[in-house]
Length: 276
Figure: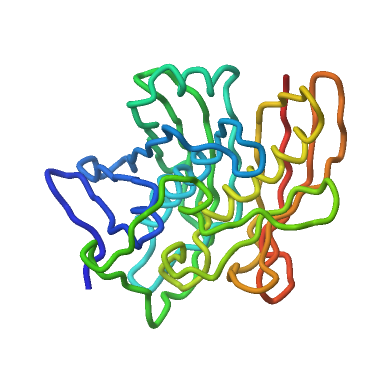
């Protein structure tokens, strides 16, 4: 069972792996840094049709989580507990100006390793910084079994839309609420059989941004996303992402966001703040 293809320090994941679905490639040549890229060209929010910074959350969860993960003991595994993303003004314009260039994420450990670990990440496009982020992880006993993935020969065709890659659908709410339904799709699950933390963090950004842009001409752009991971999220019946606006001002707005698993319990909660 193949996990990744390594060539000249670059790690490429199979298309039925959550990182492979988004074209994330890791560079493991520097042992002191976790480095990876993600392409963003053509990816839009399925709820609004607008350009989105959501793929940055996927990259952050991977690369900063990896910086914590490499510090684990032989009998340990890591689980993300917090993710914080701060987006620079004009980030979407920088991305749009270089559609053929992926976003680069570089992360390093901060401080000593204890029961938890913290990693700092900077994201850039062609040397222009567009965001900073942190991921905090805590250490658990290593799972007895981990999910493995077949190679690309057995992978289904990955559709180009962000919704298809995330295995989400726009939910029917009967009102103005922004809801995405998370399907039960093994291709977006992580090594312990739950929805990848980057995928679920993207879901929170998408619904939060949509909730703040439901009115005509709103054009709020995400400035920050803060996520707390409560428990593993599993897709399927009842699994969804939802958002509730907290404040709608003339130049700034805030929404509370939540990811609910198929068991009906909140798996992730967060807050998104946007500006115009």
